Image 1 (cartoon, helix red, strand yellow):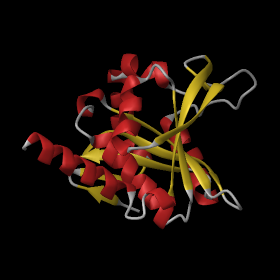
Image 2: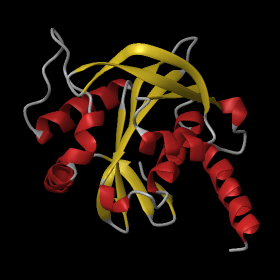
Image 3: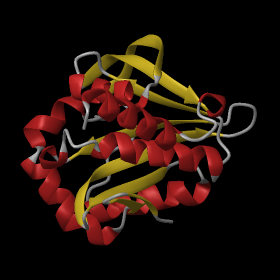
Image 4: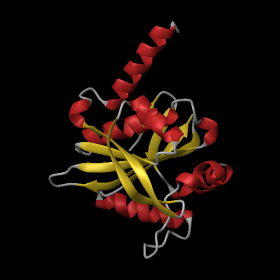
Length: 200
């Protein structure tokens, strides 16, 4: 599976991404750690290595409950977008999480990557609704959903265990009916309108 727009390629996360993934996480630790999921008391232990993490994610992908994508920019590892908690049946729902190397931030990489993945979820996976949960303090991530035009649908106190404690989150969502031509199309149309308005 390979998704692409412009210089951005998304493909399944691989064990061979380990060195680049660890380097990006290390160099961006101060920027990313405040937003990282952590294990609550009594929760399942985190994988002990990157290889173990990929094995766990591969197993979830085979079961159809999670899909991890490496984000590459001009062939360089730049971050990750993961489809989590896929629910079938009457819900056809999933959530998406993401992170990006700070050196690629502010260039529209993650909005385009997330839009690609949302469109993949709607068209290829047959899902109906995608949700993104964001801590109120995470202004960079809030800017992503703003660019994508996602609606805020709720506020969830103590929703996820992040950075060592249960944290409140703002909830954003999009359904398939809202983007009949795709979320990427809507994002690009909004960018074109903005460029026309600014005369660029």
